[in-house]
Length: 113
Length: 114
Image (cartoon, rainbow over all chains, first blue to last red; front, side, top):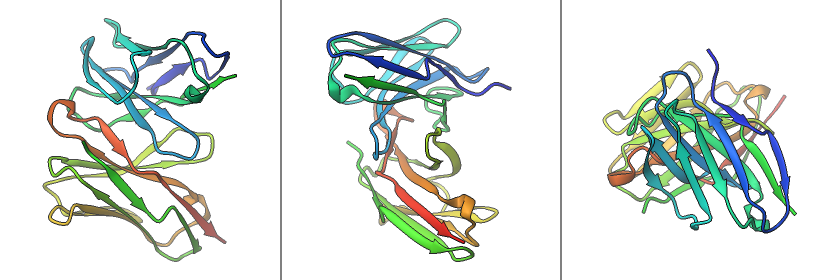
């Protein structure tokens, strides 16, 4: 069985640009969560989606948005990139909303210059 | 909201010794506490978890204990091996409307010396 997949693996953008990151959950999992991990820190919760609806949002500005598709895959969008947005963006998949066992993808390393 | 604190930030042990990492949480409604292992450049991997209706859980050389009254939980690794070297993160699941979303500690870098 395939695990959680994310694309792209690495991305370099300049300040002010926009970026879209993609995630495919484990087959059968209906919930996707997004986390930001800055170097040397633990992951920080950004969004959780279940059945295409937002079920939770962390303390991130409105420049961050996400959506979930009918096949349960998800996209994270970040507008007007800042240098401080440079981080590893992790997607985690879980069976259902409220089921807290989350399995992480390999992440997308975003560098903003 | 939930806050999770983790200690120590670094831990160095000799191969074969035990390692203990401790975390405290603030939200008494939290009911799920996983531990993740993250090797350099890799994804966090779920290694063990515990729910609030259980006081202890073991899986081979690793165990987790939970004290709900004191709001702390710990990871115990026995007979450490060099391949246990990694950063370990504890987390707590928020209650209420954000049920299931994880709040992570800042991590413990474990080094096991052969």
